[in-house]
Amino acid sequence: MRIAIIGAGFAGMYAALSSARLRDIKGVKPDELEIVLISPVPHLAVRPRLYEPNPEVMAAPLHDVLSAIDVTYVEGSAKGIDTVARTVLVQSPSGEERSLNYDRLIIATGSRLFRPDIPGVAEHTFSVDQLDEAVALDRHLKALADQPESKRRNTIVVAGAGFTGLEVATEMPARLRQLFGDDADIQVVIVDRNEAVAPDMGPGPRPIIEHALRELGVEARVGVGIASVDAGGATLTSGERIESSTVIWAAGMRAAPLTAQVPGERDNLGRLLVDRELRVEGVPGVYATGDAAKAACDDKGNYALMSCQHATRMGAFAGHNAVADLLGEPLMPYHQEAYVTCLDLGTAGALLTRGWDRHVELVGAEAKKLKQEINTIWIYPPKPVRAAALASAEPQRVTDL
Ligand SMILES: Cc1cc2nc3c(=O)[nH]c(=O)nc-3n(C[C@H](O)[C@H](O)[C@H](O)COP(=O)(O)OP(=O)(O)OC[C@H]3O[C@@H](n4cnc5c(N)ncnc54)[C@H](O)[C@@H]3O)c2cc1C
Image 1: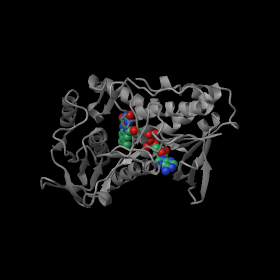
Image 2 (image 1 turned 30 degrees about the vertical axis):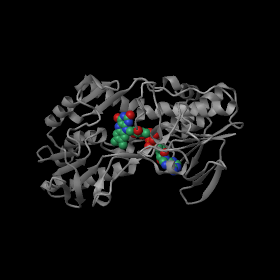
Image 3 (image 1 turned 135 degrees about the vertical axis):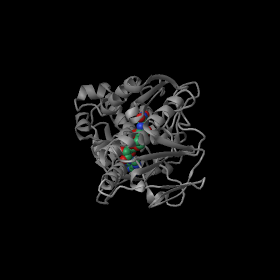
Image 4 (image 1 turned 60 degrees about the horizontal axis):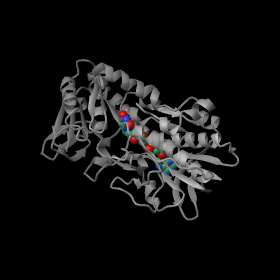
C-alpha cells in the first residue's frame, strides 16, 4: 500500500508526520504501508518569513526528519495525476519522468502569487512569495546600494495592502536604511484598490496598522490600482506616476496549478472543494489540504484561509485520514476553531488579533516578541527525533495559539 503526498510545505510536511504517526500507532510497518513525499526540493520553504532580510536562509531541511519517521522522499515535480489509474507522473530535476502508483493521494501543493494581466506586471515586479523570488528581491536591493542616490533608487512601491503587502512595506524602511544609510531620503508607498488598508482585517485592527504606517513614514494610496509598471516605476489608475526601481507585487494568491489536474470542483482561488475529512468531493482516494483546499474549519460557516496556521493543522488531518481510510479506521473531521493573526509591522512592532472578528489582543513590542517566536520556532519542522516528531503531528493539537 502507498500514500503519496505531493508538496513539502507546511501541509505536506504535517501530512507526512501525521500519516507516519498513525501508521506507527497501528503497528503497521513502513514496508507494508509506504508514505512518499514528492517535492522539487528536500526542504520546507518558510514562506511566512520571506519579507525579512536574507531570505536565502529561510529554508528548513527535511531529509533527516523524513528518514527518522520512515517517509520516502521523492525529488521532483508532479506533472500529472490520473485519478482513475491512481498514478502520479513525477519529473525529476534532470527531466526524467516516472509514474508512481498510489492507494491514497494527498495534494498539498500550496499556493502562489497571482499576477494579473496588467502591462509590465509580469516583467517588472518583484515579490516575496517564493524563496527564489525573495532572494532575487534581496539581491536587487543590495545591488541598488551601489548605485548613486536618486529618488527612483530610494523609492519602493508595494502593490497590495493585505497581510503580505503590509509586512513587506513596514519592513522596508529599516531594510533600506541599513543598505542606503540612515540619512537616505527613503520613500515607501503601499497601493491598494480598496478604500482602506488591511481590507480583510476590518475596522478593529485598522487604526493600529494605520498608526504604524504613519510612524514608519509609509505612504498609503488607497482606492486606486496599478495601471502599469515599467523598469522606471509604476503608474497608478489615478494617473499618478511613481518613479521607482522596485515595485513589489503582493496582491492575490491562487492555488498551485496542479489542482487543475484533479476532476473535482474548485473555488475562485483554484482550491479544491473538500469535505470535512478533507477528501476531494467526487474523486475517490484523493485528499487535498493546506492552501490547495477549500475546507470548512468549524460549524459556524468559517473556511480555512490560505495561511500557514491552517495549512499545518489541515495537513495533520489529511495525513491521519488517508491512513485511517486505508486501514479501515474511523476518519476525523477537520476542525480548527481558534484563529489568530499576527502581523509584523517592522520597527513599529506587531499586532495580534484573536477570533474571526479580529479582536486586538496584543500590539507593539509584546506582539513583536510573539511574532519573532512564531517565525523562528513555531513554524519550523520538528527535530529529527522519531517519537517527538510523530507526537508533534497529533491532529487535534497542531498549532493552537
Ligand atoms: C511573505 C508571506 C508571509 C506570510 N505570512 C503568513 C503568516 O504570518 N501567517 C500565516 O499563517 N501564513 C502566512 N503566509 C501564508 C503561508 O506561507 C501559506 O499559507 C503556507 O505556506 C501554505 O502552506 P502549504 O503547505 O499549503 O503550501 P506551500 O507552503 O505553498 O507549500 C507547497 C509545496 O508544494 C510544492 N509543490 C507545488 N507544486 C508541486 C508539484 N507540481 N509537484 C511537487 N511539489 C509541488 C512546493 O514546492 C511546496 O513544497 C505568508 C506567506 C507569504 C508569502
